[in-house]
Amino acid sequence: MRKDYEELLTHIKPKEPPTGLFDRIILAIKREQELRQTKRLLFSFLFLLVASFIATPLSWAILINQIESSGISYFISTALSDFGTFIALWQDFSLAILESLPITGMIVFAISLGMSVFTFRLFLYRKRLLLGYLMQSFA
Amino acid sequence: MKTYTDEQLITNYLKGNEESLEILIKRYLRPIYSFAFRFVGDSQTAEDITQEVFVKVWRNLKKPALSLSKGFDPKKGSFKTWIFHIAKNTSFDFLKKKKTIPFSEFENEEGGNKLTETLIDPAPLPDGLFERVHVGEILHTAMSRLAPKYRMVLFLRYNDHFTFREITEVLGEPLNTIKSQHRRAIIKLKGLLSDS
Image (tube, rainbow over all chains, first blue to last red; front, top):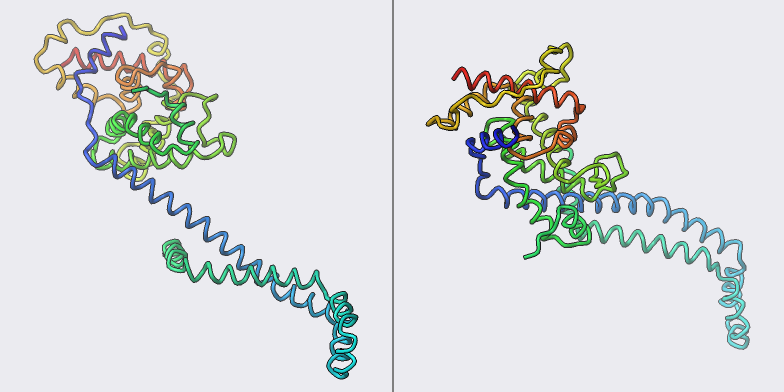
């Protein structure tokens, strides 16, 4: 029975796909691929933007706080007010200043500053792509 | 040239071989387009559906099989049934948008004729059918007069050479429903062919 019907249905000619449909499909997939990459880029950008907005002032505050609580300002002001003594004891002074440097605060601030610069640079280089995607999404 | 199975092509594509996807698309372009055309009966819409199907396939291929059950999972079934299932859903969505056929045509049937459902139909095709001059035309007319769900079962079974189990995976209906739809479709088709 199956063979009979299979033979019967061969009399209905299957519809041939139009030429160019394959290329259209490949193009649509490529477009979708680009869209997905832009979306990923946008999310990364937004994440970095929010993170740097929070991290930069916070790390700045930490750095200032650490500078104030360390003796670095005292050493520097002493070195400036009594320059002769500073020159005479420059090795001890330099060591004392280095020891009192707020290393953690400086590293955290440098990272968050670097992140902000990177985010800004990312926006400058990809602004057309990002804004285009946003406009398309909200249109 | 070595012929790869669908699953091998998918594995190769996921490993970064872009050409594998193109081979897969070329392999299924005609069956999916024919399927969509049979579903909607309009070449422009069938083109759009075919494009949409392959974009959906691409989108879901990279999804892990466990996530949200949309990704392709070879353990659940073959790629062939998976892509036809996507094609059926996409065609259905297009039809719903266009509202060209009643929604009820595709719903599970309840209260069908029990006698017809359990009836075995051993009768052969009408005598001399193959000798008729315009058999293609006659068949085309008869098929177009069948309900879409019956038409689809017949085409999948005898044109795309699916097993009943595969048809259930494509259409997402129980095996017994598919079998009874198939029986009814055969009876109706034979009736229409005898009348013509």
